[in-house]
Length: 206
Image (tube, rainbow, N blue to C red; front, side, top):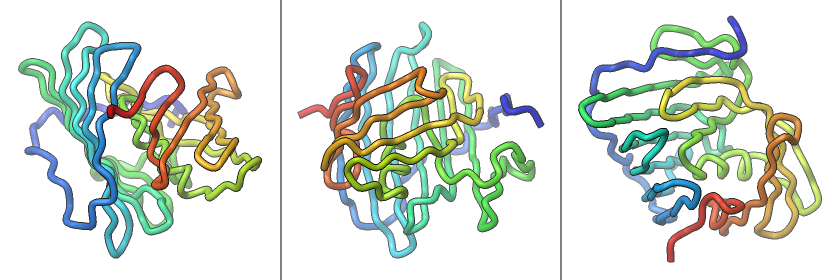
């Protein structure tokens, strides 16, 4: 299988995403500054892990989009499942990925072999999934770590591996890099590792 995988999104509408029961740790709004976009995100804690949910309304590539997502993780912040629903006008798409105990990724009954062993999902439409490697890696100030994420691009829902590096630059600050440093962004986060500011792209609404 090639490194760049264009997985066909399931075009059947599978109903609205609802947050799983659990303790709500944070509820917030993100504004995006490089294009019209607003997101309501939530982080939940469960006895067996964490769940990130979000609803994004955006104008992307000339299309008005509504996106709902849910990301479930283990207690150590390894991604276990991803569910996305995307609508634009009368067009609806959905994508549901799962990662098993052996680190293999699945789209339904199809194994995505190019992503075996990867721990993190990266949803390109939101800063919420930066929380996953930030929490999972547990870096101390001055430390860096590299990893490769399962990157989902929007609005195509195309999936590809994306090499990334995180450097903790302060108590609540990180430097994010991808594509061997071709892209860099300074992140500020809260006590839950949720982004409060992502360079000049996203900021938390107050």
